[in-house]
Image (cartoon, rainbow over all chains, first blue to last red; front, side):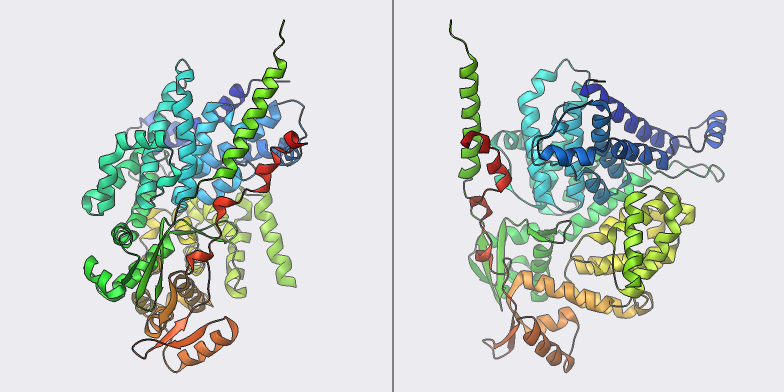
Length: 377
Length: 225
């Protein structure tokens, strides 16, 4: 049997959406009527979180999608698409559910069989493409892997910019625009915590500046107003977090639909707070090739031990740890200290000629192929 | 040998039943096993926190505390936050968790002096997990070697919380085993030369911009043939 990928995506997408909405609905206990409460009590296993996760997991396992993807790397394809695609989208569904639960590492693990760096099946249906990258980027942001998040947000935002006109009539057009806006907000957050101007395409950057220039300037400042902006953008752009457990319907009823969101926001703002002084250190470091610890401390109006702590924090926060425990540098401005002297090294951008040529060779080959197919009468 | 056998089984259990409430007690035992054998499995622990998240009434506070201490010991990895993301705010307000959150904050912001002060006041919580101090010292050394080529002796001593005379023994050991070297600084004070890496010697950083991964090149193989 063959079904359009769009339908299969919609099934999985809707399944997760219904679960998410039900959890949100259940959490607003205050407004419930007697009858609703009775029903909730009677059907306390409705949309049980174990069920949801196990269904998605079953799709992934029964479809043997992980093995299929392994085989396809060696160029083997064919057969019915239905089970295979259900399994494929099941992995994306799992990523999404885990993000809703705040379990970012497990979410990314579920997506691992899909190579995000390459065009793949997940990009065929635009809803799936956007959902994948939105959740992937968000999870990476929460894991402090800012460069990875920035890179993928940039790619998808460029893609939406180019192709959104073709989706204007699609029933999902509003959803596309909404996620587009949310991802600009997330990109603004990533770049404020970890400037990576080289990774952002000109067109995306123009859009970003148009939308968030003022806010990004504020976020650099790290005062109360800056926190307010981080808070606002996070709140606007984060997934609709859920509390998966069955509520107790006995006690005085209270709404808890905001609990999960508030926890994630609070922890995110902790992180922002820990990085409080890094932007100012960065802007000073940019001005010097060498400077003594004492002098920089005076400029930043802190004592020497504090400055040493700030500089170490900078190093710690600008280096992420990947799943294998490897340390990866995300720093745009780097430095090292020799006793009391800070030596600054600004990373220079080298043009990536190799990739450029590879792409052009492929394009050229395609054109030649097309020309060959043109039959001249 | 027997221990390895067990850990293998629990890891397998998690891989096959990531969403099965029946493995909860196995996972709890495994946390204790990690504490006593000084091993660590983030994925198993996240799986347990997930089950607690689904069924909060089954949560065991002591186990959660052990998971969090283990996660602190895994720095610089962000494991501590990953665990907090899954623990309800209500639970995080418990006294011992508040302490751990403060400790994590000091480590995340490299304020080692405050960290060791605070840790000293809370030995009863931390001593449950053997190897804690050593793990934090390793993290401190990691951050120092990202930052410094040559670090003043006093800065190092404060970060790892080792005082004379143990400090000299410690340095001797590192010189013999980890490629450290000792030097005299300008003021006559001692400097420790930390091993070279691409982070404290940025010129060693491989210029990835110039290299193309093989799988990208494979895309043009059909054309080349």
